[in-house]
Image (cartoon, rainbow, N blue to C red; front, side, top):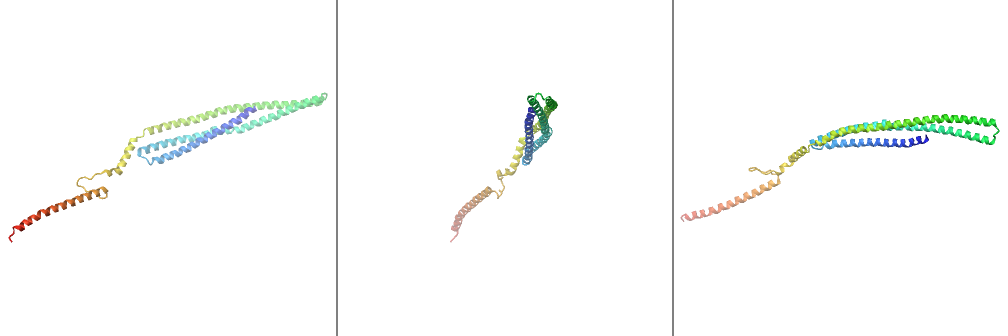
Length: 273
């Protein structure tokens, strides 16, 4: 009986510690997932329309899973961890019953030893021996009653422990099944959302915006138009054209001068002196 209580104290205490740590880890996972949800919303605001809508839907699904995880944490605390904490009090009460039995048992043994010594020292003292035998009988009766009570106490403790362990693990599995079933349902929708993401539409939107910003850099001058002076290569072209025009004018002027001089000479020669 004492071994049963000692093992229960050791292993149920360890189980309580482990399940409490499991619950805390689950709560921390929920907190990290909440941070991920906030990051997804912030990141979505910087992206193209299709990805923005997809990430927002995914973040909402992930947030919904964390609501289920919060319910999981609360149920683990209330139905599993708290029920194990109650065993500390029950084990103390059972140990007290065992100590009481041990005290009564020692008293019975002590009375038996006194009776044996008395019989050895004064075997003819019937009155003293009779009194000692009466004390032994009372001690034996107390020990028998205490033993019966202890057996009933430990039997009840063991029955309650087995029943509570069964219920506790059933609750644990049920809580986990409910959470994972809900999570799978939500994640299935999230999977479809991500799979239906139209990458090409975002690329088309990106290319349209990119061409809108930088598309005029490859423009060419149309015939009969004047290039914009703010463009460096337009200024260079205009300067080259002006230089060529000036050269042509100078050449034409030179030719015109050379044709007029002989005519004037001939005219001068034809006049009478």
